[in-house]
Image 1 (cartoon, rainbow, N blue to C red):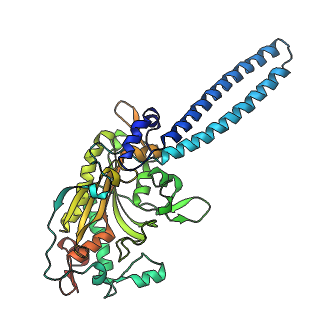
Image 2 (image 1 turned 135 degrees about the vertical axis):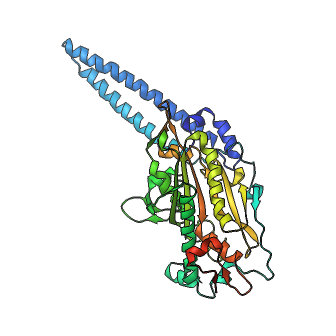
Image 3 (image 1 turned 90 degrees about the horizontal axis):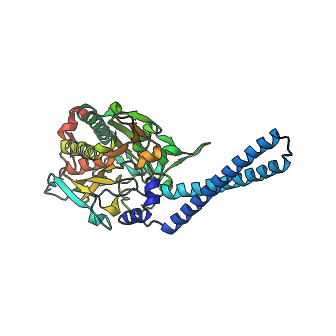
Amino acid sequence: MLDPKLVRSSIDTVAAQLKSRGFVVDIAKFNALEEQRKSLQVKMQELQNERNVRSKEVGLAKAAGKNVEDVLKNLKELSEASKKQEEQFAAIQVEMDDFLARLPNIPHSSVPMGKSEEDNQVVRTCGEPRKFSFTPKDHVDLGAPNGWMDFEAAAKIAGARFTVLRGPLAKLHRALIQFMLDLHTQEHGYQEITVPYIVNAESVFGTGQLPKFKEDLFTVNGDSERYLISTSEIAVTNTVRDDILNLDQLPIKYVCYSACFRSEAGSYGKDMRGMFRNHQFEKVELVHIVRPDLSYQALEELTQHAETVLQRLELPYRVVTLCTADLGFGAAKTYDLEVWLPGQQRYREISSCSNTESFQARRMKARWRDEAGKIDLVHTLNGSGLAVGRTLIAVVENYQDELGRIHIPKVLQPYMDGLEVIE
């Protein structure tokens, strides 16, 4: 959430900054709400002052033995009027809070301006796409004929956009998870964390999925409002909600493996083939919680850690800076990692690494205390290190041969009991 003081003092500037990312702020609605809020606040203060005066008059009149019936009647009327004003103020405040909660983050000054994903900028490219002496197959044609990927069984069990993995591909999927966790904990200094897959509404609001993206979430039926996580970023980042962290606790670096669940609302007809865009998928997520002055240094570090996975797997990829129009709701700046998929003959996103600055922290009331004892909001960052299913696709497609066999990257062979080729 943006700083309400910033929005109130600079609504036109904020609107111009958000317009760069394709978001139109209803300035007239905001000004009307703000005018009502301020007017009610003044009236509430005036009524409170008058109540204080009348209360004193009651005390003085009683001490002097005078009749206080009229003063008490007036005091009752003031109390009722004050209560009515407070109710109106609370209603306006709820409407104002909802308005502010729907404003996306302001792009960082280094983010390139753009109108669509076509304006994203390639920062660097690592590795050259392999030149095949045959027409490479996609992951479906490589995995489905042998039953290693079974989309029909998944549809029978759960419906469209789910996948059953069997045998060597199920093992390869598990190997990727273990490899990523080992890399990030043993070499990059992350603490492994395991979190619930079901979270409450406060957690989903805290990281910015509510209220705007409710349709993308799977709701859990029950007495309370709860959701399946669309990313473990939600649960992991909320571990510091309502906390005040000491300086010696920062930075916090968590790595979390989890299943993720997304309704993919609005994406039907897009990436329907195979397991590229499923309702359930797995990720190894990286989360940083840092002091504000170090957050952009942390963004570069986090991105490099995600890149290392691709480098060790020897997969060709590129790093892309998202333009203003392509930024996620809570992000101030994002790098996408895009891996080369021979089956699609194009680069596809496999990780997004974002700095949300204080946007999530303000919603969560996640703070830290500096050397002087001053309390301020932390900055939060997150990134996939990596999306496991898409990494599996990339390995399967990039390591195929003309016989349809899949060669195992050297770094994964110890996790596959020394297996070098999936026949």
